[in-house]
Image (cartoon, rainbow, N blue to C red; front, side):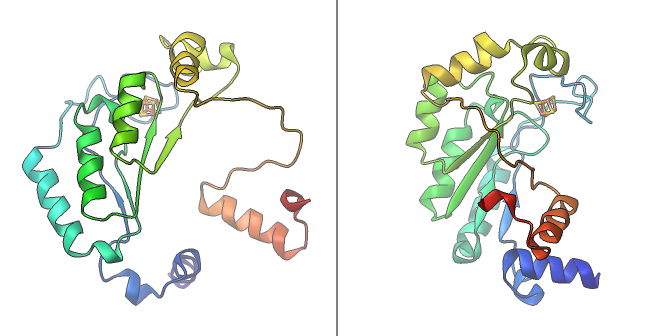
Length: 198
Ligand code: SF4
């Protein structure tokens, strides 16, 4: 608990009491299904009943965020799903931006990120998008996401939108997704071993 408290306060540069007032960070799942079946995915979408969040529930969340919007840092509109399956996603992002949310964010497998959807997201003022490709190697990608076409669907959509470019990186790389990653990177930093700024 003490380490968790310290970790949270350091990560968000805010006291725990302040953090407890109202959530600063939201993950809102407006639809709970996905069009992919990645081998590592923990969710059995075939057994799960696909559901779309009702407009009234989204409105209730929106109203609550609106009352505390100065406090909110980021709203991520996805969780265990492919958020673009929600055809009204861009309207929800627009609503969040209209009430003053600083940062909106989605993560997508990009398979249905067609130019029209991209334009809708841009016009809704989406701030951030994570594109989860899993592997740039076709044979590995095919293994992870059976039924998807890396070159035609994913890269094709992204290239049409001018949202993809490639370069060979030979330097230091490490992800920073989990607490373990943060601790390992902090350990390197504390030892003065910072290859990422060389
Ligand atoms: S894209 Fe994400 S949510 Fe969808 S099956 Fe793959 S890992 Fe699961």
